[in-house]
Image (cartoon, rainbow, N blue to C red; front, top):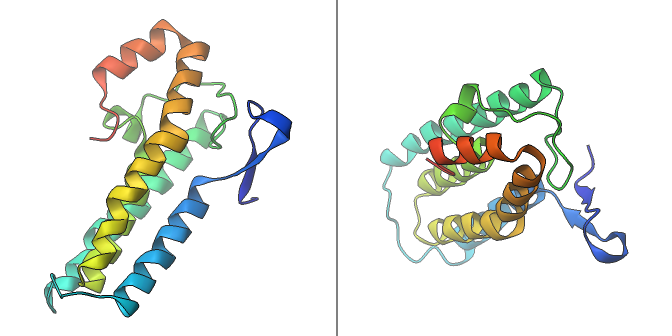
Length: 160
């Protein structure tokens, strides 16, 4: 799978980075901050091992959400029109479980690193997902699924 997606709505056929590229960039940034400017240790050893819990939960959310998209034969890629509105499984709890999963992965890594600076990347990542992907995806889902999307949107929170 390519790390770039064609955004048909953008002028000139511009290529956009997909969410995994943002995740990998965030992980690289967190690692650099941890080693170059750790500031202070906020999660001491052995408590930092607990980072494996949100990390594992984040991976699980992504695997389950991806499986749900495949089960319903709809696209997982942002900016491509969905053929099915998935509202079951992890989508009953969260409208965007893959972005939540990525966020949990980052939180788990920040806890495992234990220093203060990696935690600063997490809210930046969340804000980028909101602005770059979620707003557009939700507009597209509203246009495609109308009342069904709006009913789902009212009953299930965006993140948690």
